[in-house]
Length: 297
Image 1 (cartoon, rainbow, N blue to C red):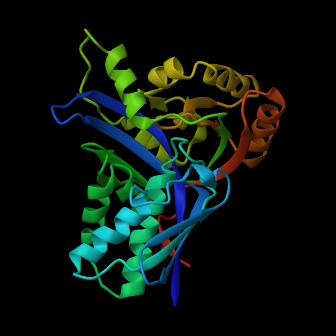
Image 2: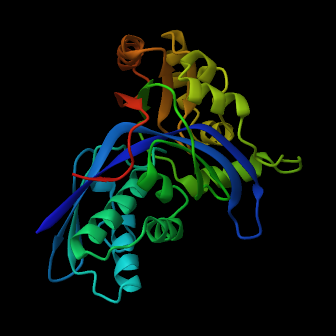
């Protein structure tokens, strides 16, 4: 018997970042939107824990116990007093090391799949607790839709969305390390007061109304200057998207994937075509959101 779970990517429509805390993390006001690019995690009973992966950039995915999918299986098994004897297969379609929570998606997917395979009957709250232990973005991968993440991003408040938002994502020629981007954020902020992160009321209202132009006027990412400092070529990709008419352009999360909001599906295709022709990125994808979180299929 096997169980397959489909899990979406995310884009951060707002990422407000506070100063570094004593534990090294940062307080965040992180508005997530789940979009229709998916990984699928299939869990099958096996003699021991092992991981395989296929899809774009699969060679960059760790196949040991550092993988969030493996860590999820181990965490659930430990909580329920059993062995994590499963084969985890990850079919990747979310960019690797791209700031779209692909690893977090795999963790949430493996957790939900193992729960179904083993019949543990864990509550949603238990699953979210394990997700929060695994990483700041993992709870949202389980929940999907749209949500405000506070704390280090793991404390979620689900948000209303009044329509579909159309996006274009440009994949960069190399990855960026999330810890490295946060270190650069800290370096760039040395000697100045960093305000407490607060969610934008205007942005939350724009989501609720399904208003792409209003959302475009309010998207923001406090990590963008740090990502651009470490990967200056991303500025060329952002400029190409602006020139193609995207109402909003931003680095997705810690990058290096860049995200472009369009007014409709036709506008998204036009921006995507322009980005492909620009020579400033490795690949281009379109997707819309919100979409549901981790789902057994």
